[in-house]
Image (cartoon, rainbow, N blue to C red):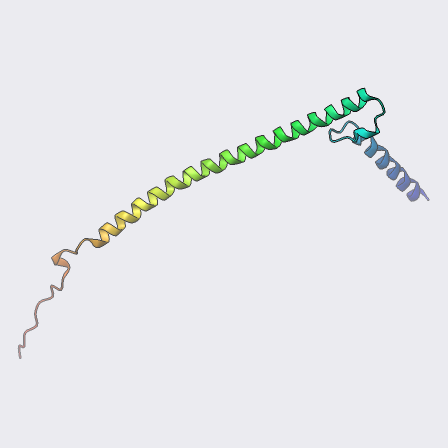
Amino acid sequence: MIGRAVAWTMVAALLGSSTALAQDVPGIEICTAEKTMERRTSCLQSNVNFLKTSIDKVRLEQQQKLDAANRQIEALKTTLAAMQKTVEQLQSAQKKPEPAAAKDTSPAKTDAK
């Protein structure tokens, strides 16, 4: 019996708090429900302001992502140039002929019996 009372009290509290939290949340409103022209105009202006704010926020986020991507591209280009230089150095070192001292310098065998 007490458990049911607690459960109903919690449900009532949750339902009551959700409606209170839902008020004054910015977003798109349905302006056709307004009867007077002034209220309808105000509602539409509120929608326009909300959309402008949303667009500006998304534009700023995307510009930041684009700037970060461009910085990463430049860093990768720098790394690639350094790697290409290293590869060229390794290839040029590999193409140089080996010195004559590296050839077979073991003494010739003689037949001594």
